[in-house]
Image 1 (cartoon, rainbow, N blue to C red):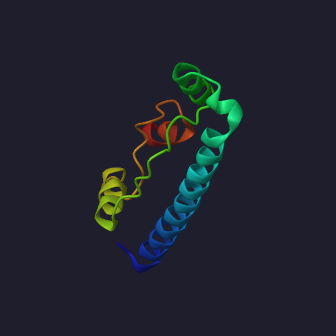
Image 2 (image 1 turned 120 degrees about the vertical axis):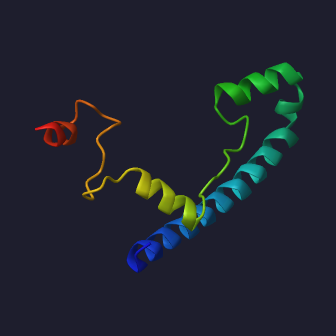
Length: 101
């Protein structure tokens, strides 16, 4: 992995991990505040679950940033022998048309 790309990936990985940690802390604090409120306690378990699901806050999203080797493997998977990206995901894109043409 070239040094500049490794540095950028490491910096992004650290920033995303730190942001997720802050999000997790806030999520847990706010969930504790919510579940401790008198109005929340008046609801039955099914109602509580449904509210959390409806608001898309029923679970804390997981974070998967991978490792340097994961990043390299993904990068290399989407390259071809001449260094151009493979246009496999969007067959009608301009990149795919350039590839064919």
